[in-house]
Amino acid sequence: MILSPDIDLGKSLRQVFGNESDSENQVAIDQARQEVTSSAILKRFVAGGNQRREIMILADEVGLGKTYVALAVAVSILDAIRTGKSPEGLPSNKPAVLVLTPNNDALFNKWLREAEAFKVDCARTKGALDWLNIGSPNTRAKRSSGNIVDLSRQLRAATRSQPMLVIAKHGALGAALSERDRSRRRALASVFEYFSIRPDDRKWWCKQVFGTIAKSIVAEMLDLRRASSLWQDDLEVGLRLRQSYRRAIQNDHIAQRFDRILEERNGKRLSDALDDLTRFAIAGEIPSLPLVVVDEIHNLKNETVQSRKNLESFFSGKICRFLGLSATPFQLRQDELLSILKLRNVLDIPRERHQGLDSAVDLLSIAMKSSRTAGDLFRYRWRGLQAHDQAAIDAAWQFINELPQSEQPGQASQLRPPRIAHAVEAAIDLWRSNRELQRHLQPFVIRHHHSRGYRGHFVGRNVIKYFSSGSS
Image 1 (spheres, rainbow, N blue to C red):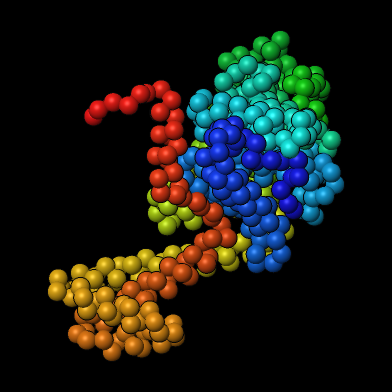
Image 2: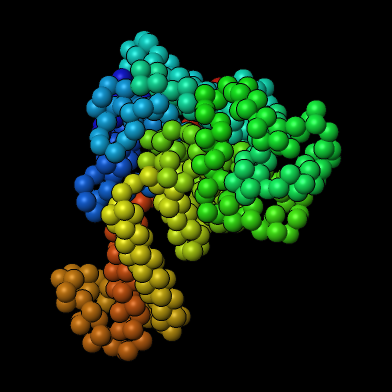
């Protein structure tokens, strides 16, 4: 899979930097980096054997265009599906890419603006990307985040000729439901049917959930023969609602949850569980997604965060490829980075690929531990040096670097005094450990830094426009 030929990332960069001759070199450098990065992600998503990575993190520093790289990847995948050139394993029916942003209006709106700008500014020719539909779950609902019903509607609106890029906040997955009372009646009717609840007990549960057993409000649950009206598709989600609820409640985890609640006769917990049953029923009909992009992925490092639990619950087995974005991934502790990579469990990939990813993460974990141990030893040995050892260390390191790598440890051990030998041995071990860590980390993580002076030059160009020279 390759970068879509209809994408020209240089066009948007020229709008940012201008067409001045002194910007041409920077535009060329940035365009090449963004195109190579996009192509590398696409290649790793579909590479053969041990080179494939269905989950990746793009960790470029702030200001290097992570959003546009992610959009280039998303649009390229959708374009490949649209034109029948996608690799095996990506869905061709209802192709939609989902972008999840933090619950932050500024970031959410930024993604919407930049997606629309990308469609125009990065089209190689005018209108080349007009086939791309961009939406969000609150487009129709007019709510700040929308909810799972709105999100399902947007994702299901995709067609092969009209793919969708849907941008949503994490909060949409757990947001309050539309027509909540009606949704709860559907869910409760499903519970009564699945657990064969007796009529008298139905009255008690209706009272707990709705505060009444008036037949005008809960007739469908008191007599399930009248429940047909509950399943009319007033949500316009295009689902067979009754079958969706039945499938959802048959999930072992969900059924066990209701079993405990019914045994405890806990009305408050039942209401919450009914809302989640509706979310599972609606989410269960969301089509398989070729790609999900999660911005600020480091916010999901804690496995108990509700936004992560919602993502894992409602989209498990529905995501073919996963791309996380973060400018600060290396501020994470080892266990936090590994926790993010556990999100691979949501992927809809063959069993052997799950095993392949597990093995790759295990090797990464071993390399991270080895590097950390080598770093601790190096710091300990380095503290053992004395101030007047500087010249001896410089000479020893130059001597060691001129040797073949296979001979370096043996020669380092013969250096004198022993404290210099120990420090150089520790430095060699740390270098080798870090190289091994890099080998296992790079397939999962891509990161670029600003060149020195880049930000100062860019900011300075803009400051000069508004300020004359002055004294400090």
